Image (cartoon, rainbow, N blue to C red; front, side, top):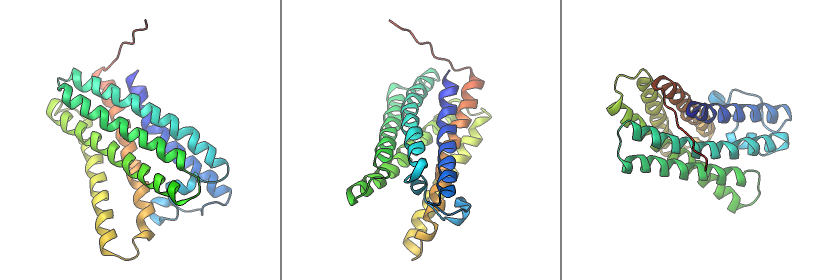
Length: 217
């Protein structure tokens, strides 16, 4: 069912990054802390060493594949709501490219060298950006097509908060010298907001009765 794909896209990354953090902290690779406030470690650092390395790659790459499926389903749903092929195609293409860059990031994680470091940075930035943009488009279309849907304020709130956090990171990076002390916390918060969005979509799809028939042969 489509809602299960949406649930996986919300729950799997959230569970994975917190599990890898716990494993890495228990094995002494990262400090014990509350990363959302203390900014003591990046998400990437939790999956670079020890057992967490295999857990991170073993969850993030399948999560990227599920993300591609999600954006295909989102295109189908928007089409059912009456959106044009151009809009559904835009949402699908942006989302799939973002998922591809999640794979790029996950593959490069743990590899040494400046090239791999650059690949990780490009991968995670484009994953966040190209996942957020289609999310924002979907919120806009829901506001037009389903303005009274109970999930709309939640989706709008998550997307608006993510935008505010993103703008704050840029502002702080340009205005203070010790921005690096806060960057990791912002990354954790953005990741949480982006993935909670999928959980709200799962509820919305269930409430609207969205189903897809699969034909074999």
